Image (cartoon, rainbow, N blue to C red):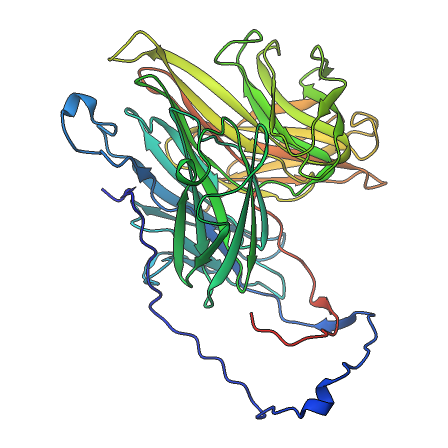
Length: 521
């Protein structure tokens, strides 16, 4: 079994980087007394397109008492079924990028992306560590690549379909989701795929404001390693949380493993991935709900935070198949600064939705949806499955890797840039899918009316989904989309929400500006 247990020890890096300082720079004191003034206008520099790097979450972290004591109370009576699926897709008239999937620490190759058709596909089952997907540029442009890590657990405390899109490393990440109250567990996993150590500052907000972490906010993540922070141990009894990660010295990825129990009954496990940074508008796609009433345990919930020092006035718009639907009390919400707030979405008609949050100060947002199941073996409480959907940037990302053995549905909404997301022209889109051999399946042409959400089932054999949207004449209507994946289980459905991989910067130019101090990393 490849899953991990606490405590987690960061892997040592197997390769060492060597930094050479050339020129023997010894500066005389009088030359340091007054730094030279520099022109702050950035210069444009030609650069080669980078190799694309995506970091996939490693195996699920198991409870401490797994396999101990009475087998009837084993929190993980079945082994997780885990894998990483990756693909590259050719640009029109081009070829799919070559690449590989490798172990984070050892560098051992778990699979190769071999070009030769419209798409290159690889699967890496049962990983024992986080995997890194690297893809080479093609014809002077970054690779079009996506990958997904998934873990399926059909019984026990971690029951759920925990899937997440693999992420490019970053230095400023916001994770909206999870909690540390009794019967909840949230583990922050920091992964450093680089060759230098990364100093990571972790900020956390709860229902009553910002929380000081026991043991301090600074975490050091070694190169080629990961570090796990058990949030209940450093920020206990926070029913709902938002986490902000800021890295220096090296880029990292981050995710939260969020699990919950209702007594002895599993109440859902999922992976929380970074969403959009604070902004006046947040868009959360892939909110797939069943009929529920306000107050139901199975109701969907929208989580919000205004992380600054000012209160936020918020308007929530839920966009479904028939356009906007108003929920009582959501057209004028007030958020206290620094306090994490959950807005219940009970009362929404069953279907697929996109949440649009407009605020007068920057906020962050995410949504969680549920699937109730049958009562568990130890009590009469029905099991519950939960899935988090992060905020995304409309128009960003065209590709999603789909795990094997799930049913997938593309949920897409066209949004106008102005105050009214429905005020714009319809746009056309092409939905392309690929099978396990990298061969294209029949395309689907779809028309996207602004302010309306469309749900399109994907062929069962599809392992990759590409959505190409033609922007309107003014470029003011963009699409926000996600892939909702489900797996049927005898005691109820399991689900997760996958966002498209973020677009890599295109072109061969970057802007640079002179620094006023020396630094490494």
